[in-house]
Amino acid sequence: MRRSLVSVFVLSSLLLAGLWAYLAFRNTPPAAEPVVASFDDCVSAGNPVMESYPRQCQANGITYTEEVSPPPGPDLANELIVVASPSPNSEIQSPLTIIGQARGTWYFEASFPVELRNAEGTVIAQKPAQAKSDWMTTNFVSFEITLTFPVQTPGSTGSLILRKDNPSGLPENENFILIPVIFK
Image (cartoon, rainbow, N blue to C red; front, top):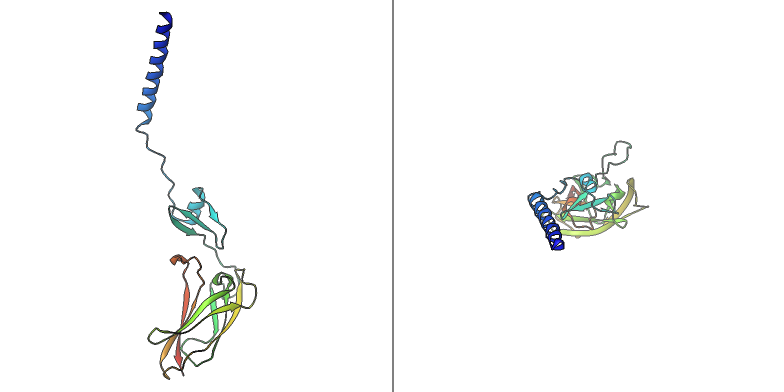
C-alpha cells in the first residue's frame, strides 16, 4: 500500500509539473525572425553567402547583393563603362567600330551584349563585345567591337545599347548605357 501511495504521489507530481510547463509556455510567442533589408542584414541573420562578385546572400526568397565601391582612381572612378567611339548623336554607317572600356564587373565570361536599334526600335545588329584582357577585376578593361548593319535612311536616328552582362536574369543586376546615333 505504501508503494502505491508513493507511486501516486510521484505520478501526481509529474503530472502537475507537466501541466505547469504547458500552461507557462503555451502563450510564449515564437522567436521573431530577424528583419532582413540588406546584404549585411542577410549575412548577420546567418544566411549563406554565395561566392560571386559582388557577393550575394539570399533570405526569404529575396537575393541581396553586396554593394561594392569601385576602387579610387582618376575622374572615371564612379563610371562603369566609358565609350570612346562613337560619341552620342554622331553620324554612323556600317561597319561601325565601337571602342571603350568597362569595369570587369560589366562583363561575364569576358563579354557583354551590344545591340544597335533603328528609330522604330528594331534590332538591326547585335553581337557580344569581348574584353581585350583579363576581365576578372574591378578595374577598367578595354573592348572593341565591329557591327555591320543594313543601310538606314540617311538622317534617321537609332540607339546603340551596351548592356551589362546579367547571367542571373535578376532585374536588380540589369544595367545598360544607351547612345543615340544618327545614320549617314
